[in-house]
Picture (cartoon, rainbow, N blue to C red):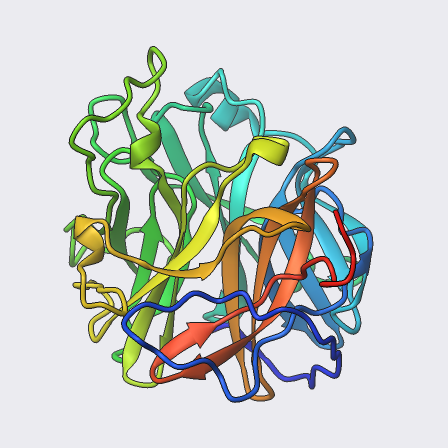
Length: 358
C-alpha cells in the first residue's frame, strides 16, 4: 500500500551484509546502504511514506530532547533529513487514565487508504503486556495544508496481563482481495494478526480471530527472566508485512533493542502464500517454530539493526530501520535498498571500511 514514486539516486559502495540460508545466491546488484545526514540521530522504529515531494518518517521518541510524542522527520531526497515536529504534543488524557504508567508512545505505522493517512501507534509499560494500539487519521501530512488535522479514532485493540500476547508494534497490510490486516506483537507468544475494517480502520466485525504468525522457540534450559519480565529467549517483535510477487513477506526483529552498545537486535524474514500464514524461512522452517532467515545483523559500525519498515516502489524498494552507533550506543536512522533474488529479500548495513581499524 505504501508506494513511492520518486527515483532514488544515491549510490554508495558498502559491504553486503545479508545472510541467507538454504544455499540462496547473492543479488546480482548487491543492496547498498543509503547515505543519510542531518537530523538522523535518535530516530527509533521508523515508518516512512511520501506525500507530494516530501518524505515523512514517523518514529518513537528517543534521545535526550523529548518535547512531544511520535516525532516526525522529513526529507526531499531521502538523504538530507530534518526534524519536522511531533504528531502529538503529549500523551492523550484518555491513555493516561487507561494506562497511568505509560511514559511515551511507541512504534508508529503510517499508511494511506480510503482517502486518508492512517497512523497506528502503541502505548504500554516497558516489559509489560498491558498495552494498546491506537489509530489517528489525517487527510494530509503537510502542516501548511488546510486539510492537516490529526483525528483520534481511539483504541483499536488491547492486551491485558492475562493475555499471551502484547498489543504493540502495529503494522497494516492489504491482501490481494482488498482485505486489511493488522499485525502486532512483542515477546510473550510472539507475532499476532487481526483483520481490520478498511472503512473505519478499526477491528473487523466479520473476523474476530487472533492469528498467530511467528514466535521464538523455547530453549531446553532457558535462563530465568528478571522478576516480572518475559524471558530474553521470547524476544521477537516489530512485524512488517509486504506482498511481493507470489508471497507475503513477514519481517521481524529478533533479540534485544534499546540497550545502547549492548543491543543485539537483528532483522529476520520469512514468507507465506497467505497473509495469515503459515510463514517459513528459506530452509522451510516455520516461523511459529522459531524459524526466520537473517536479513540484517550488526557489524563494527552499527549494532542491533531492527525496528524495520519496508517501502515497495516502482524505482526500487527500500527498507528503513534504526541501528545503534557502535561507539556511542545512540540510535540512528538507516535506509537500505532492498533487492530480491530467488524469491528472498537482501538488505545492507553501512560498515567500517576494510582498511580502517576500529
